[in-house]
Length: 202
Ligand SMILES: [Zn+2]
Image (cartoon, rainbow, N blue to C red):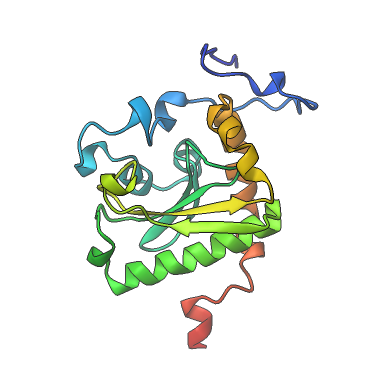
């Protein structure tokens, strides 16, 4: 398998460190979402990347859409345009814009997945803190305002100094694939102590 070269993208092997020799699934056309020219043309669910991610299941689909974890009514994906390593988005499966439109079941599952996402990121990346939150409406900075999503952004001491560099990093897709796999593989083990609706009932 050859790796298609995009002049905007730097191959992972050109980064510092030892290449591991693994070949990457590299499907930029399927990963294109959030922000810039990849932003959906309209606000319907037709062009919504979160709806696309939620629409099907399966390992290949999850890889292509950067799905880390699925619940019954919500899912966790890697942000294609991360502010920081491990930047996750917790989305409802349903295409709704406003937090007040969520059912209590959806709201609770997004809250639970947010807790679990923090636990997984702590286990895998050891961040010193987090930014959590939702941008509601384009005026508030939402890249995809029509489908609500909670940001889970791990933070490290001093990382604000390299945020502008991170923003210009061009090799994110390959790194994102690795991050997604690592977080997905660690999820169940790292969240064993995070309370779930099920365990609270028992
Ligand atoms: Zn949607």
